[in-house]
Length: 428
Image 1 (cartoon, one colour):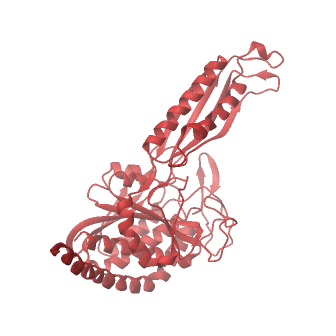
Image 2 (cartoon, one colour; image 1 turned 90 degrees about the horizontal axis):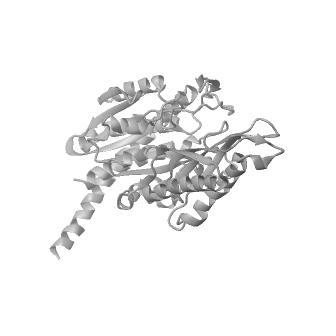
Image 3 (cartoon, helix red, strand yellow; image 1 turned 180 degrees about the vertical axis):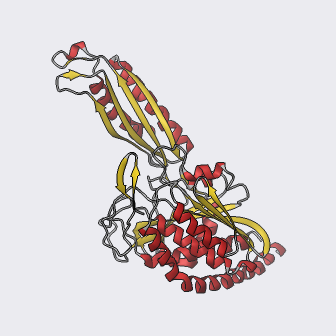
């Protein structure tokens, strides 16, 4: 009875503390909304590829220093980390924004259309924030300004993590988040939050998922070796083309017969096959490459094992051999159910309960998962589609026509700010 009475008495105080800080956040977010949009447009006009975010990083670092933070530059090549110390003791909450753009030439007719070009994998290309990382940087800069204005009321500290190379770098194996973890960014962090703008959700809305949210991404290369022969005498060959076609079909049985798709989906896609040079020569060798998407370590292990078995055994049955190589990419992005249930109230307060959408798993990948492997972390989607737009016809991420409605950026500022103050209050 005493325990119940304590809980009943405690909850109003806890809620009151949240409400007071949320009011301050709302006022500050409204005041800096135009500044956040201005930052976003500047980053959009001058985008930079992974591990080349020099201009972006300098703007971020200068802003964090102007707010009185301890700032470290050059983290994981071009990353920036700022620490805001609250006025009261408590845990450290991490907030992450990725800074890199993509080798895409923009087609949008905007006054802040990208003007940058670069050389990527030996080719001249336009550079574009075709995945919305410009909005992530601007939003987190806004959150930094909002929380710095109330730092004396914070029961803990906030680490602002501006990460390079989320999209990966073609000649570097390690993603930006993984390298940041290896350099110790997460060692003093108790929990971490991050968002991603999403062009298929209306601005003003938020999408989330408890548990497995975004897939692990791996790649594979299979080299099938047979015996070359004249195309007119196939009986003289061990045909790697026919064998490879059987492997492609065999790989699909992994999903239809081995993976428990009632628990989580999986994807095995062959993206390219190369073999042969003439119409009347059966080649000696065929290469195929593809991508793997899984949710969770056990499923990942199963799919990897079956790819090797299917390719090897089909090749052996034809008298050929198969060399199977699997490259490990990003782990699955998984929101811990207990943390998700606790922070959902913060998102509902920021955007309105009617604007919170529970989503299906996404087979795209995110290197935010490396942070989640170290400490509890929650990742969510922020709507960026024009209100009333059609998600089917709206240009998707990584395309030249990708477009973001800026009216929802203030919800991003409020959401991350609410998550911080509510989490710190919860841990008092």
